Length: 90
Image 1 (cartoon, one colour):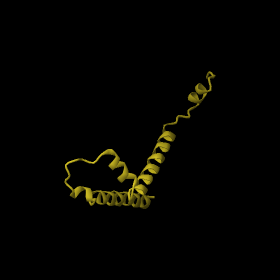
Image 2: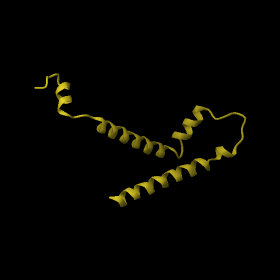
Image 3: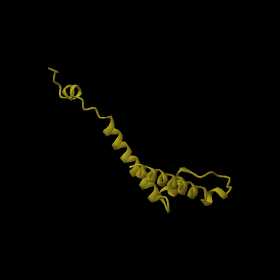
Image 4: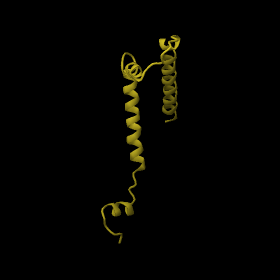
């Protein structure tokens, strides 16, 4: 189990390094234009050429995290289940 945890940490660290490398090597950083990019330019670059798959993967990971968090927050103690059904505890 510790090996799987270590492998996951290494994979996540590698993924972050690859993403940072791709962001920093973008041609936008070398251009010094007088007008900053607009939100439409940002959206096109995010969902356009190469970032579409990374955005979908990130969205799936965030959705899994939200489902997991809602499962962990759920409280199934008997007193709460009875109160939810509108009954009195005997």
